[in-house]
Length: 199
Image 1 (cartoon, helix red, strand yellow):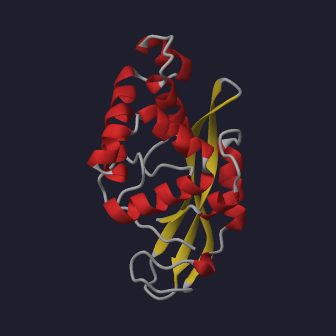
Image 2: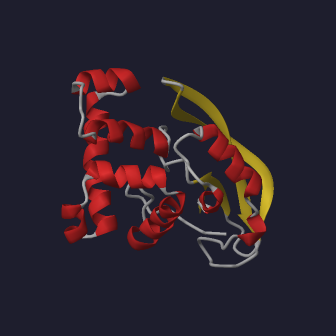
């Protein structure tokens, strides 16, 4: 798969934007010719196939959970003849929930002014308690990988999430650098090897 985060260079604040807007903007700005094939490393060898597949994306907009069907474009490397899905950064590979949906839930969970129970938080976002605890565990692991052990101890989870929402350039760095360091996308559950290419 091709992981594309370049749209975040041009954003001032991502907090107020809808996931579908981020997805559509990323797809409009994506140019397959600028990709490097994640399998063979060929540069400028990818072309659009015109093929696509559908997948769900769950996001949180206007205080409610929204489920959308997305069309995921495919590209072909003319060098190795392998096809790749184009997944903008708003999509977590192998997950139905958007990156920002998960981060919003976690921001509420880690908020210093908690005024809810775990059950009420799960009811608000319509997620299972077991899913919430999996996200918390994965987030803590990925935060530690991103910041390093010493910085992880000094930066609260809530502050870390707030910094992600308030600084789109840091988000771009997080998404691209995290993958380079770990071989996984940020908040990706699966430990399968993901493929990444930046334009």
